[in-house]
Image 1 (cartoon, rainbow, N blue to C red):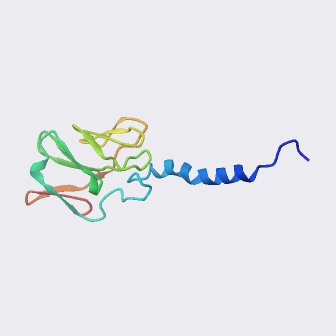
Image 2 (image 1 turned 90 degrees about the horizontal axis):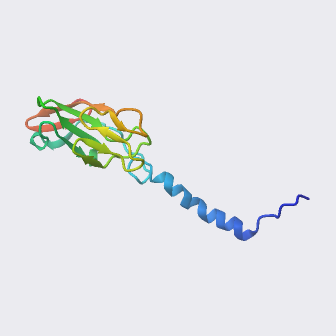
Length: 142
C-alpha cells in the first residue's frame, strides 16, 4: 500500500466539474471567438459594397466575410483574409490600416498583409479582388 491517500469522491467530482470550464479558453481562440470553424476566405466571389467606401491610402474591414480591403495611393485595391495566422481567430478590429487580433494581440498591415506585431509570424492570405460597376468583389473568381 502506498503512503498517498486515495482521491475522495468530492475531489473527483470537483475536477470533473472544472474540466468543461477549462475548455472555454480554447474555444475563445476559435476563428469567430466561439470555437466554431469559420472559412478563412470567401468560397465564392462576394460583393462587399461600394468601391467609394475605401479612400486612397485607407482600408475597410468586412468582418462578416473575414476580409479587409485596402487601396494604395495610386488607387489599386488589395484584399486579405482576416483570419489570424497565429491561432485562427477572426480579426475584428481595424485601427487606421492596422488589423488587431483580439485573441493574442497580433497586428497586421492591411495594405500588405504583413505582420507588424507578433505572436503571429506569417502574413495574412491575399485574396483576389476587383472593382466592377462601382462595387468591390473579393474571393475566388473576382
